[in-house]
Length: 603
Ligand code: ARG
Image 1 (cartoon, rainbow, N blue to C red):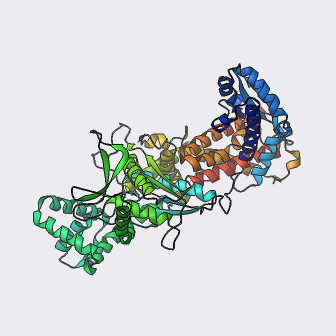
Image 2 (cartoon, rainbow, N blue to C red):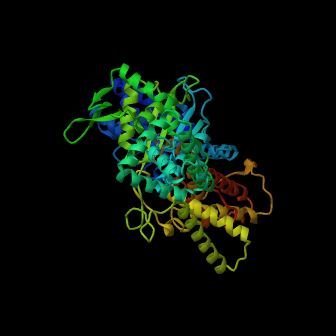
């Protein structure tokens, strides 16, 4: 109902302005127009509400109810108000509750039934301020030769969903995997490689990633304990950076090995992402230093080159430095991120021409990004109206509130975690089949448990307010009750079931006969019409859990409707009600797709 919401907002703004002018308080307008009308705090109150008269009462020093009644009279002078609203009701100390007319809602429902995106508007081809409509989502981003862990899983799931939401809106989305494929650790890895495989680098193809992780640990141990090994590792870094062909070959092999393992997980989770690792930005690092230097932002401190951050201080009140070049001349994680920002906003062929960049990492990197964004801003690398967002998320914990571990106390491998989810979903399914005396094919069982298991893991992650830590519980996420993927999938299956029973093909476009009277029909209609507003709010604030909460409420509202009104039995109501079923199913399918979750016809 975004269009109606916007139109109402305009009308309210005009009346507010008129009212302020009459009272010689026009200067207050900009402040008061913010959130002028909002969603109703309670569904029964109406569709929207406006609380501005309370603020006006403080400014005019008058009774708010008196002001409300003036304001409502003024609103009624606009004839669109009577066309759109059934009532503008003054309540409590002076709130205005806005209730829309039934035929306005029905028209919206009809238009959403016909719309592929269930009412979500597409962005304009040319954005107003001349910006490109390209959005970069930097997510997943594991590190080469290290195992992908649950933090990377969260980033992958959240980043994929955010990307899908922007894609639905019509943005051009560049999904970037900023893998850690560069840095001093490669010195020790390559040295270890050369030692163990006596310079026969072809052998490395036989190493599997689980070995590569062991391999990482072993070389780290040597690096920490053997000074001679450390020395050779340092020399190896220089060789690699100067482009020595043998070192590059070894580096590539290490990357390839890791990539294979990462790709397997992406394939399993149906994630599309383009690898563009840290190494990609190597050629641009030097000029980052030069430009910061030229702009006089760079400071030399104890041999290192850094930028002192404004407003970010340590315990002694000293500003934190963002180190751009280490004492030994090496570059940092932050240097690469600065080069990446410049490249991604750059309009030249040597750049992406993005207008918004979104980073999805754990909360632990919040300071890193705050620092990097500040330096980019001071260096004027963020073009006007362009935007940088860090999307932080909390830790994944076991049900005991501690870090997620196996029973043996080992860190859980992602692969194993996903396998376990599918295995448990299969157990549940088999039990259900037995109880219901149902027979299903192997193929059905395999697909259903895969969709439920993987869907449950993704949904558990997305439905949390991402900023808080969340407790990983297979039992909770696989439950058919509550805010879970199985509950949503089940509601969708229920709708498919109704449609299968309705053997008479119905003409969904037979809008002539559409009419609603039951309270639970109207509740469902109002919920269905909120979909576009939810999507737009996520585009702004990047909180996919809002979509999950909405879907949970939608399913609850649908299931109440299903329990309270017969859908197929009353011949003259059938088309009206089947249309609501169809729109619910469409929104569910579309949304689950936005969350990266496959759907089922039966389960
Ligand atoms: N590789 C990093 C990690 O594992 C995440 C990179 C996030 N992206 C970025 N542009 N810094 O923590």
